[in-house]
Image (cartoon, rainbow, N blue to C red; front, side, top):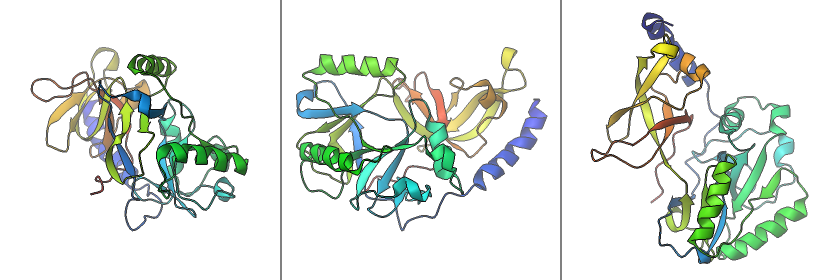
Length: 290
């Protein structure tokens, strides 16, 4: 596709992407406990560890299911039938590497019954409980086990003795296609906002940026996307030139789209090092609760 044609269809794509409404919105984003990053030196023996699932975070308020941004998830009625009338924090998940599939289902105006049968709600916390996390883990296992609902499950929580065992676990999960690990201190209460008692551990970092332009590909990508020009919230602009499938290069994220990228630290000038496209973010994360 030549640049002239690209200038014509990219605004159309942006219009189409903006015309796909999310479900009804709550008064505001649900109050959630948010993670900080794991750093070497933490005594990991005091934490419960689980796989970081690459799905869509969901909050069950005891009656309805909401996204992190506060939009109602219009799942089929059978999906949440029989769920405990207890607030639950979890991940709508299909499997490793299938974020786009579950994200599309959550955003759909009409629920696809057959597609939803592949989804599980993986529960990792009980925000309405004042008990310490270790007690909440035991309660999740017992409560969800009693429901007998196959697609409503607790996230598997395990313990490690030291950092070496933690690193070995991370290596195995990433090699199998997983994203990383979550560490939750056994004595932590459910605190809204960023918490040093909830840590995420990945071999890379990720963030969001807004698409502000495109470059045209060369060689095997002639007539397709070469790179996205993106802008961080602080105004820094840089390029994302890798991580795309051929289909994404043929129909790249439009100008205005919010995308998630991964990177390995920052250069001396603060630019993300080895930045790589991950996926479009259809719902911007809400600001951290105060």
